[in-house]
Image 1: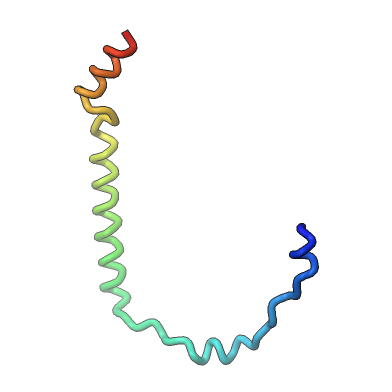
Image 2 (image 1 turned 90 degrees about the horizontal axis):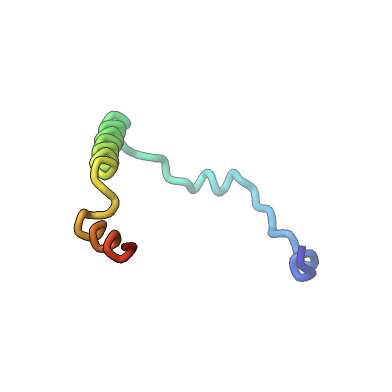
Length: 70
């Protein structure tokens, strides 16, 4: 621990209740939220699957790399 950190004061603690009282409740349809998340998950999985099926290096670039390696 550096000397400046060791010499610094702790942050002031504040009561939690006033912070929670000012918090806005989450408003939304849990079913719609779940459906939206499931759709995003499916789209990301499909994208990941498509990326896994294609080569990392395209054939033209691979050929150039092989030519350089001789």
